Image 1 (cartoon, one colour):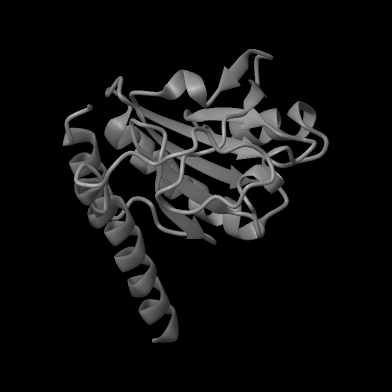
Image 2 (image 1 turned 30 degrees about the vertical axis):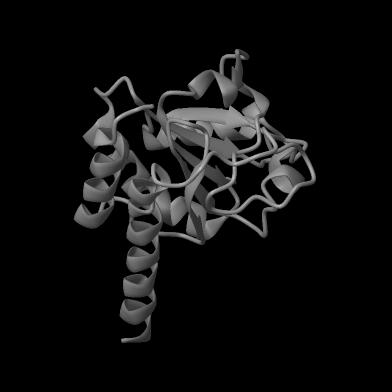
Length: 187
């Protein structure tokens, strides 16, 4: 019973956070520009830019994702809750994979990097984009408290939702909230 209550609260918080983007258009622009390393990042703030490598060694920046809705998940192969939620992330990814304005990024915190992460991803047949952060560069800039942590970032680069811990991302409410966010007109 307690697990269902906690899961229900999590769903409500995620849905409310994503739905907050509708009110964002009514707010004045946030002063101060981009959030850089060391700043506390919370819903409504600009997400900190990063430059990380994918599994092929290509550089990926968050800045290059402007104009898209970004699902940013911080995880590690050794993390049980991370492994638990990844199948639901794959299901969510499959729901939106044909949209050019949606990106799912899973940033691994594994210190051994590609040698550990790539076999895990291949074995589990995940198709969303994997980035490597073996030096935990995102730790300070996103004020991480552990793994998994997930941030939903709108087209303007603002964090509209932040979830701590494992979650079932395949739920209808999540897809509906993301669909609503994607339908919001870019300004």
